[in-house]
Amino acid sequence: MIGRVLSRGGGVYRVHMDTGIVDASLRGRLKHETASRVLVGDLVRVDVHDDGSVTIEGVEARRTLLRRRTPGRRRATRPVAANVDQVVVVGAARSPDWDTHTIDRFIAVASASELPTIIVINKSDLDDQASAYGDVYRAIGYDVHVTSVTAELGVTTLRESLRGHISLLTGSTGVGKSSLLNAVQPGLQLRTSAVSARAGTGRHTTVAAEMYPLDEGGFVVDTPGLRDIGLWGLAPEDVSAAFPEIAATGTGCRFDDCRHGVEPDCAVVSAVTEGQIASSRLTSFRTLLAEADEASRPWQGR
Ligand code: GDP
Ligand code: ZN
Image (cartoon, rainbow, N blue to C red; front, side):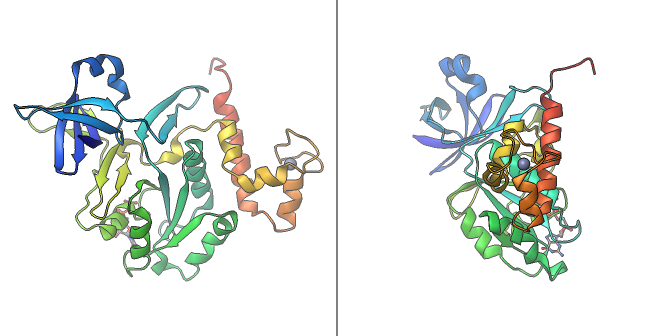
């Protein structure tokens, strides 16, 4: 039988199957070979034994891998979840104010794992201009949803784009992620803390990632301890890949290694002056690139 790993803690894997959710453990052999490699989101082959116990016998090939880069360690990444196929970046139009730089940062982290991104502008009831914040992103080719949980706007469309997918919802605190998920599927309650006390055992388990099945098919992934994926590290090449419009225009710069800062004959700076590239995007690009360079520099006795 085949199931999907929803969460993992203390050697117990919660596995979602057509027949329901079961607790499973790794088969002895697998424990030694790949203990650290069975991830939330993995599609696993399970055996149900006569005594009712369930073991994970194998892991199916992954389609994607969400990785978290360890800041300051250029090559170090840690797997967070398998088979996530889209990242939903949520921002609020107001309260807190729309923050395009934070959105760009989230997009860059998603793009570092080569995952497509959907942008949600929530709390549109608080700002008549809400939809306009999305123009920059629509122009680059992103899907933008304008929603309001309070006014019940855009929730149906969001539900449709989650259906059948494994989606990671992310965004700053207070933008309305939990409210949106509850509107999409009433009763879906995300854990609010990175640490969960396991009842009875008194043991504390850090939950790296956890998936919730959607009634209409698909899953939503939450990363309680890492919910602000904007804090995840970025490598310089991740930053370039996350700004496709800058990369495309940058082929016209005088210098091949132009950073679109103070270099002469920079095609990107010209495109910003002419209004073809949003200046907010160039600002984000420069900030994230400087940060990524700093983080990837070898340790110098700091
Ligand atoms: P999270 O931290 O991203 O999960 O945000 P929450 O879902 O906890 O929402 C933060 C606050 O914003 C709560 O008080 C919500 O009631 C409120 N909120 C969420 N969505 C909306 C919305 O569309 N419009 C308005 N006006 N308030 C909202
Ligand atoms: Zn340039």
